[in-house]
Structure formats: structure tokens, C-alpha cells
Image (cartoon, rainbow, N blue to C red):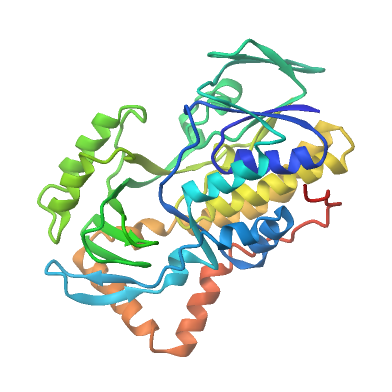
Length: 394
């Protein structure tokens, strides 16, 4: 088939890798002018994620870029260490920077996949035989299948499924993330400082530059996801007066070229496909923090490609089976993410203290540590990978 994928972050190139191996012609359109580097860390945990990466032939390349992060120290306003969050809760079995993951996927696919950067889909019209797609820059084209892998703010989802607010379930947490020069002497380590409804985290996976995350909880905040100036002002206002080294970080934020801001939102739809258009990853089922979003993206890409091959070209059968297999897994991951706000940004000083005590105790109680490790991977492994006929690695 001739297949169009919208989105060149993680889900889209993961699917492209599989589709070109199965013999399809693949185009990936991405509105950014070039591959996006940098960004926050993403992780894979448990046998399901790792086996999927192995089938993709990417384990060695990703392991070479792994962060190997240690624990994250929790400090008070004076910088004194209070407790520490074990690496397993953030880093899983394999953690890489999102930009590094995107680069590995791009390098693995760019010779056999057509990438169309600096462009986006503006209209989609379909009939029983194909999909007519209009672009902002390129001439219109007709495809056999269109995949929306363009994230929480998916343009494909809006064009085909509508812009119903009921499709989004905000978790009430917002985050601003950026990179700055290292000022805290961190290497493969992190620091977290919290006040009620506010958390600051600084980490340095490879030494040198620091990745800063400023998270806050607030119900019903409205913002323009395209207006970076507005987003910087929101962070500056919410973190004004916050202690520790927050003023220093806010000053660096104003100069950061890679500043990113968004809400933590789950996407929940009654169906993920309509005719010859289907959604993948965050565009169709964003899990939210702690919901294994990156793992869902690569597993979903594997399942979608595998079902298209198994159905022998019958896209209707393939898309139905893809959804039947993935929905229970997605529901499990989204349920876990629902509890993330009180962990990331506890709402009271009492809850902050309780969280800190928990992590202080768990380090020294082997049964509790083993239970914690189990809880950190149980949702990621709540899926049985189908035994698809795997194409040769090329």
C-alpha cells in the first residue's frame, strides 16, 4: 500500500520502520522544519517494551545512548537532601532522551521512507478506494491509508474525528521543560524540590547541560499551545516566589531555545479508525505521565503494522484487530497515569512529607523495594505481544 503517516516524533517513524520492511511505500509528513532534538527523557520498562525494541533491531543503538540515570535526590529549600526517588520509577529498564530516540528512528528509516518536513495535512477526503490528502506546501496526493501519529494536538484527529472536548481528559498538571547549561554539578543524577502544587526537577543524564522540568497543578487552565511567549509567562507567574534555586532556573528559561510547555492530558476516543484513517500513539490514546506513553507508541506501531500484514491488505480487518488488541493495554496504562498528579505535584505540605518519607523507607526495606519494582513495571507488561511473521531486518 501507499501509506501516509502524520508525525515524525516516535510513533510515526516506529510505524514507518515496520511498514517499509513489510514492503509498503511510506511517506511521513512533519510540520516542524527538521527533526526535533533534545527534550525530556523517555523510558522503556519490562519484557513487552524490550522485546518490541529487539524485534525492531534498535536495542544496541538505543543502549549506546542510554542515560543510565541514578536516583533523584529530594531536597528542601536550603538544598539539604531529604530523601531520594529510585531510578526505576523514572528510568525503567532503558531510558533515552526523546530527541535521541527520534534520531535513532529517523536514521533507521530515512533511506527507505520519504520524509516531508515543514509541511502538514490541511484536508482529508476519503472514499471506499482511497484517501485524498491536501497539504499546506506539497501538491495533493492520494493514499491507500492515512495514519495520524501527530501527538495530543493531532491535526488528523481534528480533521477526521472532530474537535470534541470530550476526547481529552486533562489530568490537571502542566509542565515547562527546557535545557540550560549545567550549574549544579550533576552527572547521571537529578534533584527535585516541591512546594504545594509545584515541583521543580533538574537532571543531567550525560553531564554538562541540565534538563529542567517545572510542573504545577491547576484545574482548567486554558492556553494556546502555539504561543510560546504566553507559555513562558504562565510558568514565570506560577513559579514566582517558589524557593530553592527556582529564580535561577526561571531566568535560564527565558533564554532557552528548546522551551516546551503542555498539559498532561489523556486522549479517549470510542474508536481509533474511520474508514482508511487510523490514529496511533498519543494522537489516539495518550496515557499521561506514568502511563507508558512511549511504550504504547512503539507497541502500537508494531501491532498496527503486524495486523496490516496478517490481514493481507484488508485494512478494515486489520484496523479492527489493531484496536481489539491494544484497547485493554491502553486502558490499563491510562488508569495508572490517573494517579500521577499527587506524586508529581503533591497538593499539600503534608502530602509532600508523606511522599518523601515513603521513598526514604523503601530504600532500606527489601520486600518493599521488590514490591516497588513490581509496581513500576506491571502495567508496561500487561500485554502479550502477538507472534507476527517478522520481516527481515534491513
